[in-house]
Length: 141
Image (cartoon, rainbow, N blue to C red):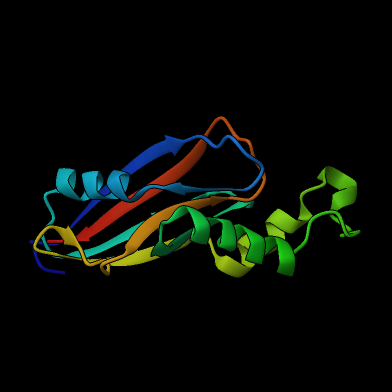
């Protein structure tokens, strides 16, 4: 890599108030990009949790309810998952594994290259949780 290549990492925490919740984190990511001073590159947004996920899409109350409904419909809680014998959250582990713990977004001229309606969101699948870590890593020059 050239001498202009840099990596900036920031860890932030968010809390959830419900068992299932969509939490907008776009501003936290934008702040990290600004702090990094990196103008062109990529930003990785990652949650180191087995029962939460990160999505990029529109943030609007009805569609947020639809995200949760889709997850509950296709990976329903309390249907006899074997892991539920341990801690009653198999649905959250399975949904997180399907959706994934992170996203990569391009950065150009110091700005996230998100679409008009796109936001970055943490999806809580096993709340409420007092603290969910979000790791934001900006890579570039």
